[in-house]
Amino acid sequence: MVNLVVRGDTVVTPDGVGAYDILIAGEKIVAMAAKGSLPIPEGARLIDASGKIVMPGGIDPHVHCKWHLPNPDGTAGLTEPPDVVSKAAVHGGTTTMIDFTRASQGANVQDAIEKREEDWKGHTACDYAQHLMVEGALPVHLPGQVAEAIQAGFPTVKIFTTDITPSRKGRMVDFGDIWEIFQVLAANQGMGVIHSEDNDIVMHMYGKLIREGRTGFENMAEVHNTLSEDISFRRVMRLAEKVPGTALYMMHVSAGSGVSAIREARARGVPIYGESLHQYMLKTSADYKTKNGQIYHTYPSLKSPEDQAALWSGTLDGAINCVATDEICCTLAKKLQGARIDDTTGGNAGVEPRVALMYTEMVGKRGYSLNRYVDLVSSNAAKIMGLYPRKGALATGADADICVLDPNDKRVITASELHEADYTPWEGHKMEAWPCLTVLRGKVVVEGGTFKGSLNDGKWQHRKVAAEMFNGPQL
Image (cartoon, rainbow, N blue to C red; front, top):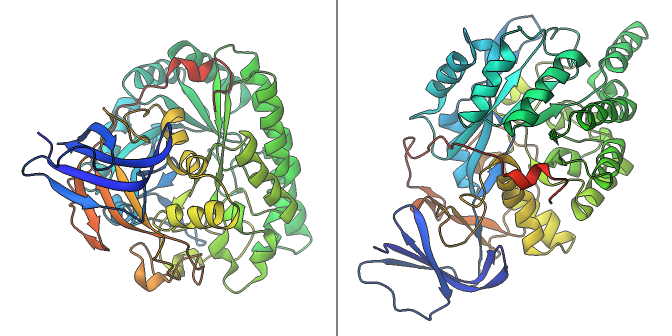
């Protein structure tokens, strides 16, 4: 029985943009009809979104909630939990987030998954999934457990090729173990999601700058540099090519060298997909020198205007498929607590403004089509991560996850009006539109800026990456 109809004259579907009525019964879209062509079913609510942009709910494929947050004194805390971040997400039109389960945080992989689920179930206003993360020296029994997790709906496995900072020993996986994991991925239709930097280069530069007394975080781009990205990306891709059936998702691409490596591998037929972050696309290393410049940082690092231009180019030719946040939600004081190259807090609070911010930058300023924009903030992540067409599409049979953007709401972003933290790296940015309605699986969870959902609304999403995603680059 149809209980909700969303009517729009600018509805972004997989087949293009048009005027449609979206008919929703329970959690699903049951029909897409030409606008006004069918009578509104008795008892159904009509939401008229004429003059607005109706799109699938945003999907952020890279967030960290209730996550380990190192302090400069060697202690550690946790970032904000899903209870906070998920409410911010739906306020900003994002209906699904993908976080991480650290395999090392349980007696075995299944135990780690069950413990991580306790952080999310009953604590989230949006749907969610988890990448599995493997770290350090891998136990001999782990590959078999990873295979089981892939089959159980956790098909993406995060791997670090660096320890990131000198104090985080134990993150990096050596290439022999990566080779073993790639074989597991290829055999089980799993995908590697890679934090790819050359550890030798990174650690050499930490040592060099520390010896020279240039320890301020404003020098971060010299440590996490373009050469490191170039060498590591190409090494990882070469290894993947030697294990037929291995597909890769390169996380937080920050440099033109990374874009070029992805582009060249795709031209050879390698099934590889690229993700960048909104801070890399809108900020450069020069922003480290501004007041509170740490708020723009995440690892690897901000780069040059030329690198930034390469990222934008990648969104047009397929080298960059998704724009994520690398969400780390904490207070401004926590974000600013480190000011050295080796202790600056990564990530930032960005999941709420991401959808509107990228609409402003892509459609408003750069003339991207609505379909390309939706691909970059929603649909491509669903396809790559094994959620499509259940998520990331306004189509019959899909989950009724909907974001409505109001182009008349040209607000200026300010932290006091957001729902994540006491700061935002996007303070003062004027938007070309802002979400006025968010629907999660048929339930109106935010309307007119008012939260109408609950922390019991979000559900874990079983994922299976489509077979075609492994047959060369598909996006």
